[in-house]
Amino acid sequence: MSDKKRFLLRLEPELYALLERWAADELRSVNAQVEFLLKEAARRAGRSRPEESSSAGRPREE
Image (cartoon, rainbow, N blue to C red; front, side):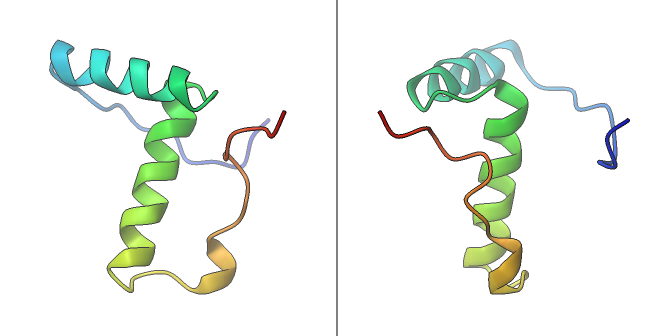
């Protein structure tokens, strides 16, 4: 079982559709895209340590 915390997130349908398209463009699931965006926002705000920003969840190079 995953060691990640689960929680319910309610979004407006329009925002979810936007996230779906964005995730598909970057070859991620919607969940991975939301996690990536939250990590980036935390990093930019100075709320996370550099080692917490890993390459996990980034699109695959082809």
